[in-house]
Length: 77
Image (cartoon, rainbow, N blue to C red; front, side, top):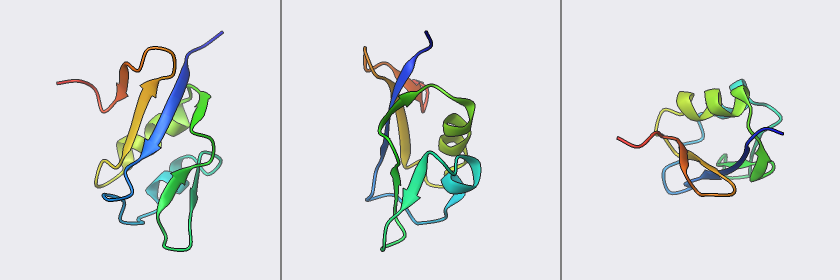
């Protein structure tokens, strides 16, 4: 069984660029204010969600390992 991720969007940073939807249309939704949120905050690790986080122009998306809380993205410096 693969890793499980916890995905969060910092709504104070989100600018509604929808890049996350472009990369992971099943992983994110935009609300009426055009702010992103994860479709399912706890999800199986997958490249599309990682690409969405990497493409966010304001780095509003964070991904951690569900069981340990260890950062997946952004990586620790």
